[in-house]
Image: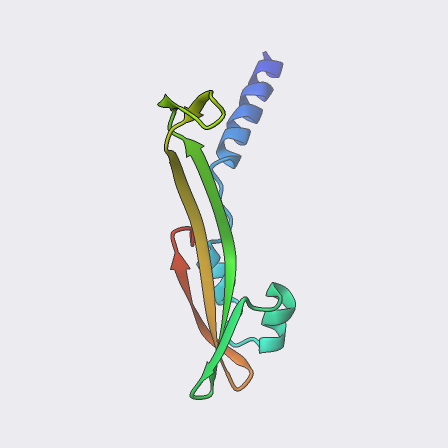
Length: 118
């Protein structure tokens, strides 16, 4: 009986652990506000894009990007190899770009843009 109770408790614990989430991207990046630009570059690497306007440097990082193409099913026509061709393809892309504003060597803030910035 104790064995069954232990197994049930372990399964419940594993099930609840699957629901646990870590800190959000927003809260993780908020830790860089006030940090020196050198720390940001040391941790995230060289930015994909950078521009300076009126004394403020904007450093853009593409943090997440994924594209998935899935055929929607076989098409009713024949392909170029004289065999059945796959029909239209559904493409889904997920991306998140973080742009940090840096003034006088310190991170002032950031913005997130994209459909995968959770």
